Image 1 (spheres, rainbow, N blue to C red):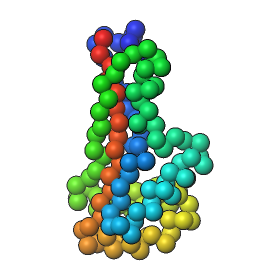
Image 2 (spheres, helix red, strand yellow):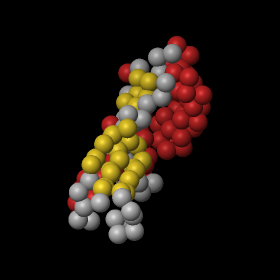
Image 3 (tube, rainbow, N blue to C red):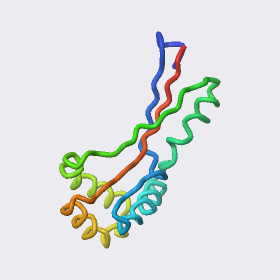
Image 4 (cartoon, rainbow, N blue to C red):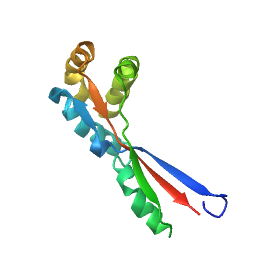
Amino acid sequence: MLRTSRHAVLLLAEPDHGGRIDHPEALGPIRGLVIDGLRAEGADPLMGRKLRALCSSCGVDAEIGIHPGSWDRGRAISEADDEWKWIESTAGEGAAPLRDSWSAALAAGSLFTHSPVFYALIMK
């Protein structure tokens, strides 16, 4: 990576679902369902927090940071259906009982989701 770059390399990870927060509290089980579903698909839902170790194993020192990964209310409303479809496709039938709570929180304006996205910046 560094050999072919001029100044820097930026690595991005999928959201670190181990740090996922869903609010109101009734939506708390989504985190575990998503983690289990991703693992069943062969993914590592905790990859973001492992970026430093990944970079170190390649012999590079990286600045590790986190993008908050949450949406404002307008975007939450516009993205809620697609987010729920992704949750259902990842978590399977276990998510179905939470659908009403998700919809109610969205309608009330209290729906909050947070998935931190880790990045690594490697400078030459």
